[in-house]
Amino acid sequence: MTPLPEHLRQATCARTQEAENRARAALAELAKAGKPISFTAVARQAGVSTDFLYRSPDLRSRIERHRTKAGMAPSAAVDLAGDSSTSAAVRALSARLTRQQQVHHEEVTRLRRTLEAAHGENLDLRRRLARYEAD
Image 1: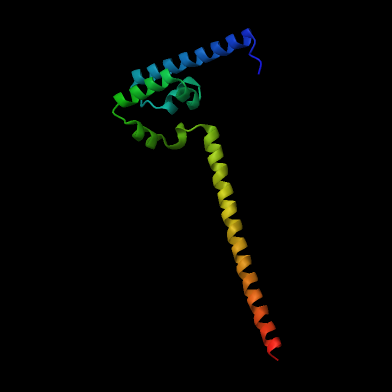
Image 2: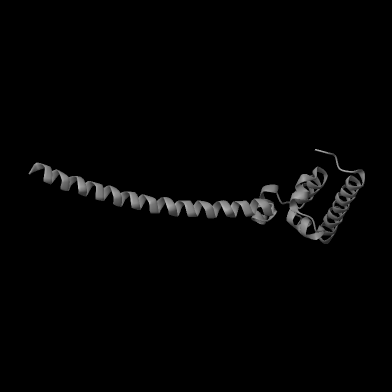
């Protein structure tokens, strides 16, 4: 894999730094306003994804510290936020998996009923055959 040209690498770094600055500012605004601090709230305020916040060790630790200072344990915050702190990709894949599981469950149920009917027909045919062989 070829490395990125220098100008693209610099642009990427600048964009990442800008997003980090927006997230820090959003965190400060939320704390100053006394609003609940969560990954979702900071992401919405800063216009970044929650994945970005989770992947940034500095931002992640700051948000967790503020959340703990507010008296909200990380597990309680996750319970309140529900799946909103989960990335959109994970939620989409989970929904897709749930739909596939439901479709497969319905198909297995249908196949079991069909198999039961086939077993019944097979048993009936064996009994009829046994009657004819006995004659």
